[in-house]
Image (cartoon, rainbow, N blue to C red; front, side, top):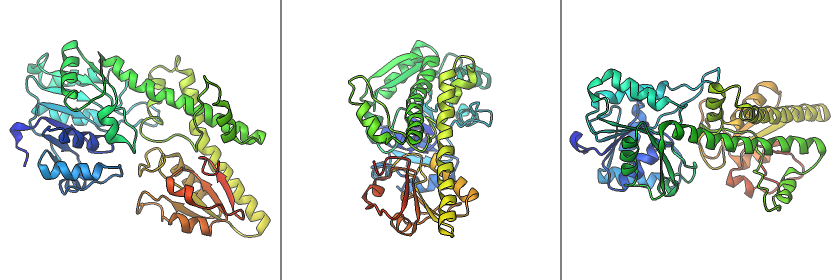
Length: 405
């Protein structure tokens, strides 16, 4: 049992980043309390189990729970360091919603004491760290200049989180040099990657820049795929050949861009700097449009099938997650495409997602069964099991993620 007086770190948020980070820190000898407002999540973790899909995370959580290095709770306790690892979605106007960051900050304010470290890891608009510092000073003026406040964005890939938490470089920016150094000293206890010091604003913009850069590169590939479809060119062959050039590295197209980072973060820059962020905005719109383009292709193909065959087709939507081999459906283009096909076509739609067992909205079908029954197969996500399905030439296959390349 973790005692209130000897907690090294509290992690606010036990989702796709918070839980792996808390468990990994605990595995390196830190005494960690993970906090989540969902009691079911807390109960699951305290049983040594996990509520998300991430390789090797289950064994790690079980180990640190059993050793007592990690415990989950619905409220924070007194500790030496506090980490905010909660979602930052965007609102309908594409402006960042930092209400979760503020709520988590307010939860820890009563527990802060002189000498503590407060770090935001959640992807945030520039100046968010300073806003939370101002909030802390307002609520606890006696702590002004007596605690250390910094921003350190996560930089991991779902499906490989545990390895990357340990080995990836980190950018750490404090509201002053002392806060930067204090945060670096803490992360050095469990991160082997290089810790790069900067200030809070630069660290915040660095995270947004990284994901916006990826979005722009993916937009080029997605735009190219639509051009190639119009021109009757195999985009996968084209990209493979173009990449033979020593200074060309085109990414692979897909059904759009999803997830809580790349599909969201560029809007934080666009909303704050609309006149300057022209390429970033256009790329974001291109990647959003790609999902509509894919949905339109499937719907039109279903209509053509019905006209030619005198019956409604069976359409298999292969994948719901935002990327291969995970269970994360946040901002997923595949999910959006599936929803449009269900609502705008007369087809019988079989929904497939091998990484989840059930869904509140969709009735899921086993992937081999769905392929066998389908007249039209829409490959939306490149999950590994899909590559093992032998092609049946009697079926119409719309490949948006390179399964048949």
